Image: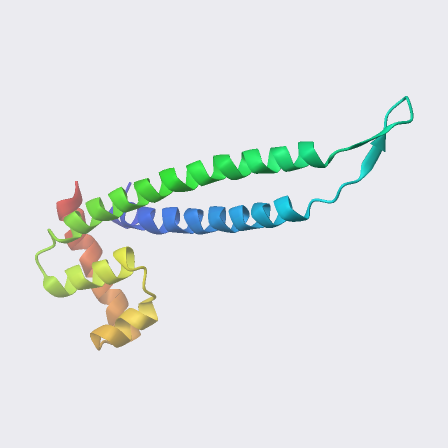
Amino acid sequence: MNAKEYLQQAYRIDVKIKDKNLELENLRELSTSVSSPTITDNGGASKSTKPDKVGRIVGRIVDLEREIKSEINRYFDLKSEINEKINLVADETLQSLLFKRYILCQSWKYIAVDMGYTYRHTLLLHSNALKEFSKTYH
């Protein structure tokens, strides 16, 4: 794994957590709005499928909440590890750029404005920052 891929791990986990939270929100909505159709068995009596459907949804909600908690723990551990390694970069400007991009997940445009550089110069600095980071992260 190269330096950039290593640094991008936290962002990918963050996106994964956000996606799972959206899924969780949808499941919670679904669990309160499940309709109650009736199914006729061979004897002609009807029975509701709602309890089974709600039970499966609630089970998935519980599993998803566990997954999210685990991902959040992994996310914070990884961010802490990445931050420690970023702090090993000697040049403070490069260190700041890496922090803004990979810890704060800021856009290149925002970083450029914040640091007072052109967009193009910011990308050039990023290239230099990755080279410096590569020397320290292994």
